[in-house]
Image (cartoon, rainbow, N blue to C red):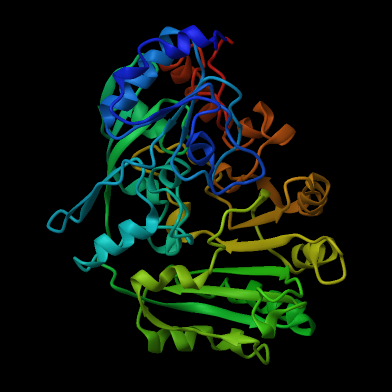
Length: 453
């Protein structure tokens, strides 16, 4: 791949931001990300501070036929680079809010929490996910299933324009009338480096939500109640039920230590009084270990899921389900419930609503007929557990979501990527890949192989 020292030294002073090579002070800190199971090990890191740094890095890599990796926060790392060029975009953190147009212009390194806070100053909110530390751009490139997804649809459908550096070193501005626009949204980083984008905001200042946590004896009853309840709720309500065993360690709050629990996570875009009425069937399941449902300022919405905020090692697969029946729930509990010994975090999310409707922007997100998605999260080495739980769901499975695949290894292959799309969508993306990245320089991702290669 031409990763020799002379090539890496050549013209490395063309960048405004810092440059790192293996052995340099700061190299290890620069490659570190939220995912700790593995990291990029590039021959050259460009710490980009603006679009021109990114453009110069891509041009430099293309000139020497070096593969390119991109990292802002390291949450979605799927294929770790060994050699090549890493463009680190975490320094690009500018945000501009236009309260009249209800839009945000964000650079490539902006994190969700920063955007939530900036939008809240104007009585607005982005369609962010559950974690405030996730990068906004990476989240949108995956499609973006947000806290209020059933009400507002995929977050990527609210993108207005994209600034993209393609493999030829050109800076392009994409809008919805460009065929590459919809291909970029939903396909990860296959078509270049997104240096900035403009995304729509919604007039949401508060949300009713939180968690209802049930102890082991009530797990089966809670899952069944949630399953039946989701058939009755309006699109304004998006929810998840998560099942997991907490370790018996001091870092876990006392009421949860050593327990296998089911936690219903609620996000309702409506008045608290109506929210209280809607959740009554879940509270009727029985005593809760935790019940913190409340109306909260939108900047506190990350507490609904309370995702881990510290870097750690993890991997995940998922199954998109056409339905979630009594038999589905029984199969899931047998494979991953309190008596299974599986040791996985299982998260069942209610889809439908606006997520099921076709995209005007033509974003590359398929399987919209899915009514639920089951995420299966384990340690990175426990592929057998992930596979076994997913296999138990086979009778109801339509496919899987690329948005909820975490981790690398043998699972992150072409077959896995293809299965995330309809055949015609994948063919369209592969044709565009052949046109815009024929050498597949952008391949450290859920890679779409250029057509003909």
